[in-house]
Amino acid sequence: MSVWLTGWLPVVPWVLFFYVLLVLALQAMLYVSAVVELYRVRRRDRHRLWRRVLSSPLAPRVSVLVPAYNEELTIRDSVAGILALTYPNLEVVVVDDGSADGTIEQLIEAFDLVAVHPIYQRRVRSAEVLGIYRSRFEQRLVVVRKENGGKADALNCGLNVATGELVCAIDADTLVTPDALQQLVAPFLGDEEVAAVGGTVRVVNDAEVRAGFVVTPRAPRGFLATCQSIEYTRAFLVGRLGWNPLGGNLIVSGAFGVFRRDRVVDIGGYEHASVGEDMELVVRLRRRAYEERHRARVVFSPDPVAWTEAPESWRTLARQRNRWFRGLLDVLVRHRRMLFNPRYGSAGMLAMPYYLVVEALSPVVESLGLLLLAVGLMVGAVTPSMLMPVALGYLFGVLAAVFVLIFDDIVFRSYPGLYPRVKLGTYAFYEQLVFRPVTLVWRLWGLKLFVQGKRDWGRQVRKGFVAT
Image (cartoon, rainbow, N blue to C red):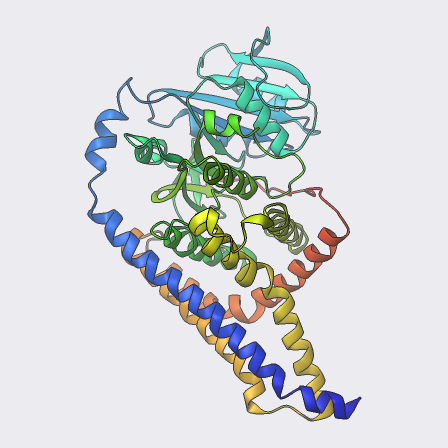
């Protein structure tokens, strides 16, 4: 056994090394693409267009869908913030997905809701509607109470009730900036090929909130929230923006994105059986477009910002991350026909393989590498070359995080003052050294549950916004 291990151990580092090089090359491609795209976006003058057209009654009607399940701590601020948006042609559809807490009571009290006769066309499948409510003083608000069916089912119910030509999915724990909808809708103007637009999502923990808006952004205080803040910045500023010029955007965050309603309805709405319903919808939308030989562009716009509450307990975050990983695996398996298939353009030849190699395989490869490293230490067969992939991956991760934080600060000035910048820069080291290895365990847990066929969401714990 020892001889067999000793013979194979020298080969493993080189396999891992080439895998790490491949991953780093793909990620470097996204970083370069993101910088180029941001420069292009900054030079393009959309502002005059969306300020003139999208501030008038001629603006396309947008129905904001807010799925809510046990969101009594945040639902008031979230809905109030959405209703305070400056978009002129707005409808807000809140769907209470059979909450077991006081979500519906909070809405009734805050907005003086009364039951109305439920009249709508059921175009996509959803669970039974128990009641529809309207506000006595806010005609743009519709609240739907339905049997519990999960987030995808709640969004489908919202699609049925909505009347807008565009729909915007916003999580109930999400706050948005006042002109965010104008900026999200702008790419749709004059471009029928645009099927969906996503915006930037940031961590709201410990920020100052007033009347449903973030008035003072602050870097989170807690370790977990701070690490997630770095993750979110990297994921959106590079992971989403970098795919724009490559035509490979496959994700519009379920917390903040706008879709053409008819396109979503035509493909049957959100998939009930998927725990990654946001990514699955976009991939299915793009897949159908390729198969029917028409274009469905998915665009990321960095300027519109939404703020979401990040989990601050290890248990809640573990459930979230294993669910996210199961969602990714579900999409890759469900749409495996697209992988390396030129029929599906950049989505099939570039984006889907990227998510397979960089995201889906990484926890397996990383854990295998760490396991073999441990075995090598036990049998005394570890050489400096065996440590190279680990060191290279860690170094790139830290440098990439620091680069993104500096990039974000120069372009967006997300957090005022010197302290948050220093803190986030310092946490870039902790995120790679402590946080990422822990997420590795959670992703492996998600892989195990996926193989076992587990598809439930789990329970999310909220602490609420810091209001003033």
